[in-house]
Image 1 (cartoon, rainbow, N blue to C red):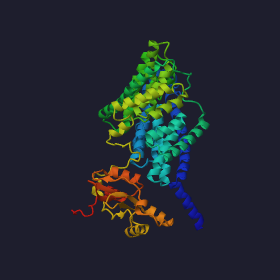
Image 2 (cartoon, rainbow, N blue to C red):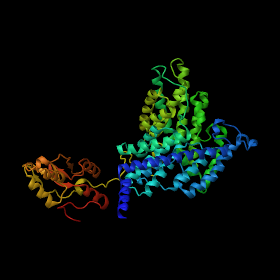
Image 3 (tube, rainbow, N blue to C red):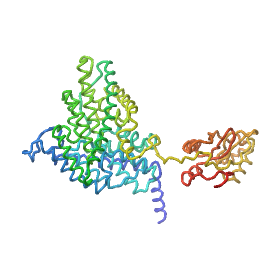
Image 4 (tube, rainbow, N blue to C red):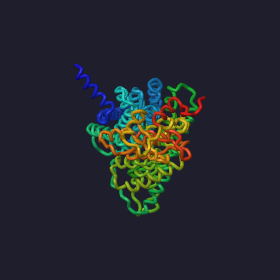
Length: 588
């Protein structure tokens, strides 16, 4: 009976810790995320049908509810209130992190919590967001489904007791699977996860995310069909002069994207200051304000993709486009500010389409024979505003291409997105996703994907141990082997007859030389060139150097003199217990 159990344990360990096991889990997570995304889309459609009488009210904005014909279009005032009475207590009692647009919470969980998300978040976020969007909340589907897919992946990883490094990757795979199924955009989903959620393009991350995205897309296409997000006529660049218009659109889109981020959190601040009642009642009370906005502009009800379609098709005059742009900013910000649950990616696309279509109308009026139809500018505007708001240019380009299937606008799209992302960085230090966390005092340190906690202030010379007795450069293999056997070091420094460092001999090289019976080699022959740490360098820099050197101990130098020896154990000890006195230094 012991043999089968041992085999089971071996397989279990490979599943939890091996690269192949991670890929198997990524496939499973992709399948789960796909089914979750399909279920969420059905929930949103069903909730919208109940609250508005149509599967998407903006297909016929201003129409009366079939069950309430006497109320006319005024029912939209009550819909957000009733929805708020349902999802407000649900979020308050079930999972308060389900409030808001979701993606920042996933970024924080991946970066600072080892990928741990409470399992209940998936259920609470799905139901609350469906009720919010169905009841008129002017937000998108991507934020909720990213949080749902990530929560499902995190729950699976925690059940398997995966280490944090694997759990983070699995959460990123869950996010990619969710986006892939929601928008039928498997390539864009990969870059969304790698660029925004994981901030990591390593091979292992790429493989897991790709498998999850492909699996999710294959299942969702089997269930929902394979068709692009937007069905559009062919667009093309009419004249090279248009690139100047697209460049200008990119710069304006940066301001609009950053402006949307500012308005979003400004409205949330105003709602926080004004509301003094119980939090569970806040969505219903604020729903009255949202209902008033929807009464004036019913095109802003829910996600609003039919309105976006009509704008791309050139179905709105210039003034209405600008009104819808400003209105969407207000309605989406108000939905989040009153405690609603939904994403900001959909509103960003909507705002970008309105801005682009308006720019296209202006370009067509100035140069009617030298510019493409406004729809081409609307597509470019969608990607440019998202790049300006989220500062993820790769995702923006690939996403718009996959959502529309329009390759002809890729070049102007790249120009506008690049300028929007660059200008956005000049205008704002944060993005629409990171700003929420910065306001809470959380800095994810996105430049370091593993987001290790900041290492202590002490410098490398404060944690360095005594310098091991160096090997002479001409020491023979037998002498070198004896020194390693006596000292227990992983590596030893090698110096020439003038005391200058020639390199470091790793123990593994000595072992290899002994196996090969290489009796004629010297310490200098076995030495490897390594970086020399300078006294005063930070522990962050020292740890990076140790990692690049393959984990070998490194010498510390001050004024051309070797003064200490640092290993990864010294650095980890300083992180966990504080620096210890250096050998030869007086104690406290």
